[in-house]
Image 1: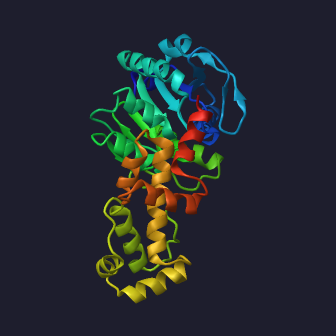
Image 2: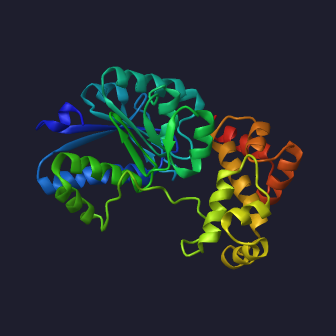
Image 3: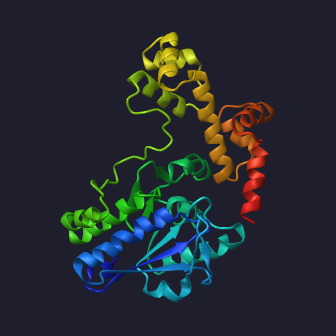
Length: 326
């Protein structure tokens, strides 16, 4: 917590909007602050929507948002949160955002990120020595790009004056945690109740995204999936997966047919290709490096299977991304 949050003055949050930011993440962060003000019948929190120059920023949904120039509000800001989404910012604006984040750090502002905003914090060098988290879809790309940063699968992470969350409703849990730290759990639960939010999740809780099978799947299937996820770069044989899962090969095939409606080999292949797709979208690694990281020794073999699953080549994903964010 900052000194301002501990005082009677309003605590000021500035949300620095990235291009194609997630409205869900932003709303989940702001609404608990608004509700807390209403329940306390005073302005405990204030907030600004900001951009580099006060330009209109369009959310991923296509809805435009008016903003203030960030340099006009930075001086009074206690928490600066970069809001990401499908992509954090257009490349031509990236340097400006990094400059603002570093400037805020020098002013001892608490700095955080919603969803893919964590990418910018890493690029700015402000996560060195800190724990962080990011949306599960971007985790593999982030970990490959910054292997020395401790990025978890937690819904949110608060490590001293760095706050990151996985986006979506995880932003609400993070804000409710901040409210509880200042005003107690009873106040946080009162705010949560305003949104029919039955249970406030903690930092220890993990993201469940990306799991293709229901929790009701038997332990052998869950174990097999965990093994597959842990061995994407050097895939295990089906016999190895079955043995480590405590069942025979044929039994594992029957279980996958029942719970996944596909063979374990197909499930494993799609798991690898889906991670490759995420890395093509969210990282700048070369196609050959991505292919190798998910167990393909040749780009042609990788491209063939990628096109069969997604209907276009890996290079098509990259071209589409670059065209959108020029």
